[in-house]
Amino acid sequence: MGHNGKTLVNGVSRFAQSPALRRLEWVLDGLDGTVGWGADAAEAFTPEFAAFVAPDRYVEVTRGRTAKYAPVVVVGLDVGETTARARIRQHDGTVDVVTCVVEPEHPHRIASTWVTGLVPTDLTPRLPSDFADYDMPTAPGARLIVFSGLPGSGKSTLADAVGAELGVPVFAADWLLGALTPFGGRHLDEVLDVAEEMLTTLALRQLAAGQSVILDHPVEQVATRDRWRSLARRAGAEFRVVVCECSDQEVHRARLASRSRGIPGWHDASDWTDVRQRLAEFPSWGTEALAVDTTRPRELSLAAALRHITWEERGYGSLQDPQTPA
Image 1: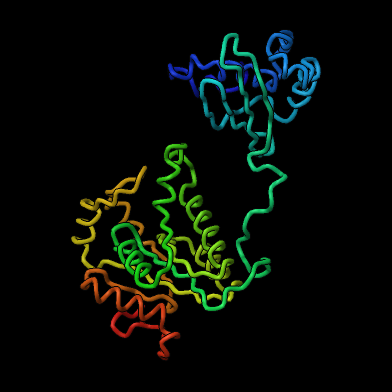
Image 2: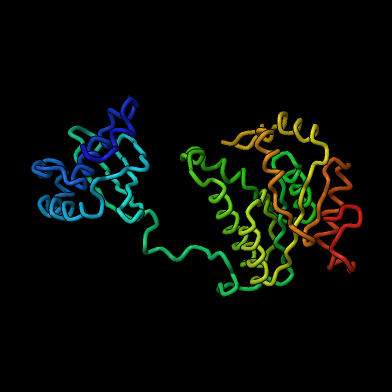
């Protein structure tokens, strides 16, 4: 076989016996341009699928695609008993998905198979990086509130407390990512990008409905900060940022080692070495953010955050908490 599908699954016994995988490999052989491939096509399909796509036509179309794929490079594989999918790379770097569904009973003929782009072309465009020209209703009086800071800084605890006080929903990156774990989410290459896209979508949905929203995420990427700032501006909403910090390194380290958040599908403890490195590289938010030292008593941190978030509403003159400058 010219492609590297077998390389991905050899030695994994529960995959080796999957009828769907064996049929998928047959399809990939066709895309790979294997000599003599397709002679058994009439026996490979269920009668229903053969009535929909004639076997000789399927062979012709598949052979015509070898110029895009051969030699086939498999960059991802999802295998079940009756459905298997391979993500394969075109010569230009684009990734497509080959899906193969087989009948549940022997001889497990192909009931359907198709090739689509990783991002189907018939979908509406994804959200922009800058919302300046995005078509959406405005949300006067609403707020986009961001709680930023690294793991163990206390941002989730404070975000939840502020959300309860103001009656504003809190969307946390770790809860969203934990929900993806049963579907292979822990193995995604750009897991933080996935979290940020989901948070952006949820924030857009809330603001479009005229409602405030709290986002709980480290937000280490300046581009993400700019994107959320532009979303708030486009929606006519206030943009408020609270950066949580823990000034005592021993306390911070102890929090990471002992915390028990109970997030389904996600971890509790974090690696102190990783967090310490990220702290050293954490970009400043500047004067628009309120910095809160969470080693202070909880009620003081909560009061400072609430003053910062509702400052204009209460008629104060400055956005900064005089006790905790950013």
